[in-house]
Amino acid sequence: MIQVFVGCQPPGGNAILDNMHRDRKRVFVDLRRWDVPVIEGEFERDEFDTPHAIYLVSAGTDGLHQGSFRLLPTDRPHLMSELFADLCDGAVPRGPDVAEITRGCLSPSLRAAERLRVRNALISAAMQFAMANGFRYFTGVADSGWLTQLLSMGWTCELLGTPRMIEGITTGAIRIPVGPETVTHLKNAGTWIEPQLSFAGAAAALAA
Amino acid sequence: MHHVLANTIDGLLGAKEIDDLRDVLEAATHDLGFKYYAIGHHVNLIGPPVDALGLSNYPASWADEALSERYFLHDPIHRASIHTATGFRWSEAGDLIHLFPRDKEILAAARPHGLGDGYTVPVHVPGEYRGTCSFGAPTLDHIIATALPIATTIGAYAFEAGRRILRRTHPGQNRPVPPLTERQRDALVLVARGKGDPEIGQQLGIARSTAHEHVENVRRAYGNPQRTFLIARALFDGQITFGEIFRS
Image (tube, rainbow over all chains, first blue to last red; front, side, top):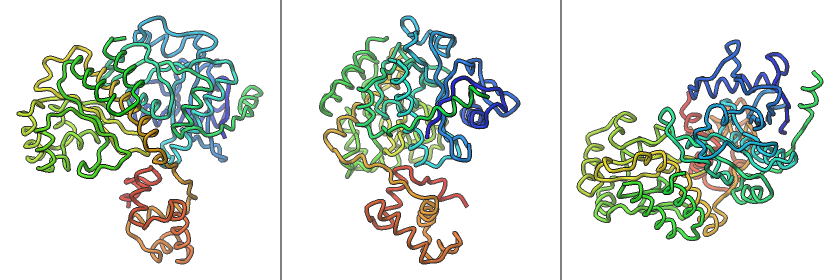
């Protein structure tokens, strides 16, 4: 099951989100060596983890993080507008119907087949969440490996400019249309898993 | 966006047949200042499976030599591509893997065929053969300034275009990964380590008959292949990994 959390929590505020930030540190800092902030030595959190960020999280019944995405509203500062605007030929796409998808993270503890299932469940949930909430596009900054994955999942990736070498890795800005047509592409690629979205996490987070 | 990239992506995603991909890649290769391209999955070229992609305009003289000398069996560029997630120049392959004398011979043998240097991008998606997209030329002195990131991006879209066409022309190849229980997977890893039912039972602390039952259920989930093929299949689709097998 995929849970939706609206707004980040301070460390200790929510066990599932804490575990997500711990895995993000393991994946992005320890494994991929990104230069991003680490809080209290164990949580990867940056300036975009704000009350406006939305998290889609797959967690086990034990609360352990399996995988997650972060969606950022583009009418506020987000990764592409603040750090990668020069990857876009024109203006950075922004608006109430555009969400930036960032920090796609799968737990390093997952086994290979599990990783594929969790990834597919998460991207199916992201699509359903976006359609249900009036979004028409996802945007994102993708390196060549992530672009390959996105394309192979069946997502239509429109490049917003010519990708560039950033620290030796080809990186580009993309836009992905959201809608029934994309769902068909995901189904054709064998990626679609009928989503089971739960907003219980969001309600719990807001009540906390 | 750079016009070569924009035109190439449109051409790739609009391609209906594999032959259309050849034309688009050929044009892109020349526009970027390269001479040759090769894009495909790493499979045995003497008998490639039908769902593998393999397109290239490498000179026939080189393809013949590579096949007859069986260079492709330990092609240093393919081997280097497994050690990186990003593109690399052939002249830098020695930074990624140790080059044995045989590797240097292969690289030197390619030079007279116009393949003096090049750029290779690994393309790896779980559940798919490992692949690469390469662009080569006598030297890389004449490629356009932004050729490398554009070549990388073209590689990603070319594979996706190929996947879509293969899906249409070879439906049914895209089998889902069967879900297994924790215990079934543990048993499968032990099968891959060459263990028989008694040892599997012993290591998992279960009866031999239960171990046998787990393995049989895995075989059933995969459509009853023999154990050897079962392992190949489960490694291919990511159900188990090499790391799990070799971990002591």
